[in-house]
Length: 180
Image 1: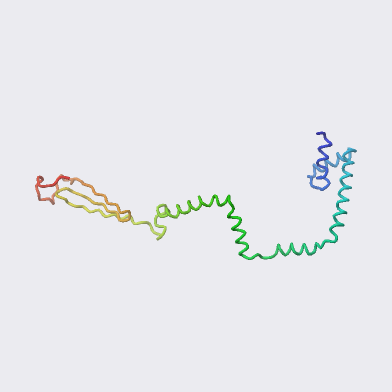
Image 2: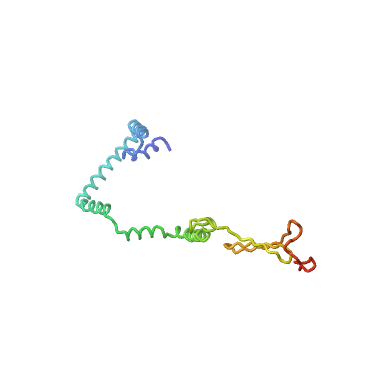
């Protein structure tokens, strides 16, 4: 492409006033100095005059006042809430958005079901009571302890040896004791 072809491509945009100030000045100076581009400019200006005349003649019998009143009325009228809701639902329930709906529902349900384990006491506003009862039992001279935790329904049983070496509460001899 030569320089004139580049300017001829920008000529219509320049005539419409859509070029930046510096680009418009460059096109103007080229058109003023180039006979071929000057002739193209005159043809485009003549075409614009003819189009404007023909469009104005065709538009004269049309009732634009009624049209513009209708446009203004549509802009200012308040739509019923049902129409707004219907438009919103149509925009939301498009196939690409529905594809994201199933995973979203699954995540929300999982979060709802596991909220109590993630945020203890969120329902009552208090922390959980981690109270556990420990019972110590002397079973045939052996010391046994039971741990019961009510909330989780946990029971732990363990055997332990007395630190003094002997259980003072047992009166039986070691031979009579059952083995565990």
